[in-house]
Amino acid sequence: MIACPSPKCSSPNVADLPHYWRSLPSDSPLKVEYAPPSKPKVSYWAALAAIAVGIVVITEGAILLGLLLVLGGAGWGGLVFKASQWAEAQYAAWSQSHVCLACTGRF
Image (cartoon, rainbow, N blue to C red):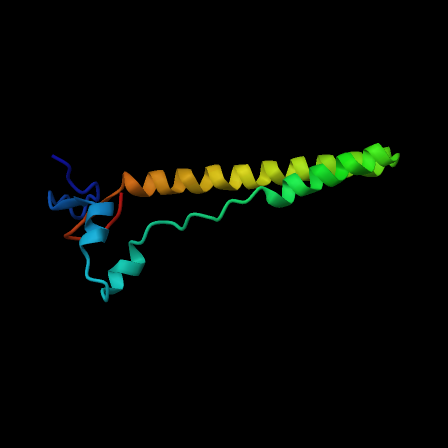
C-alpha cells in the first residue's frame, strides 16, 4: 500500500499518475497540470546531411572544411541523441509517478 510521503498528509488515497491523468475529463484544468512531458521530434537528417556533405567536400580536396562538416554533423547528431534520451528519461519518470488525491502532491 502506497501512502503520501508528505508528513502533513500521509493519506493512503494515492493513484498512479498516468492512470489518473487518463481518467480526467478533457476540460479539467488538471489535465494540463498533470500532462506527460512532451516527446521531442527526433530527426537525424540534418546531421546525416552535414556528414555526407563533409565527405563530398573531403573528396573534392578541401580536407579541413570537410572534417569540420563531418565533426559538426556528428556533434549535432550526438546532441539530438542526448536530447532524445533525456526526454525518454523524463517520460519514464512521469509514467512511474504517483499523485495523492488528498493533497494533490506528486511523488
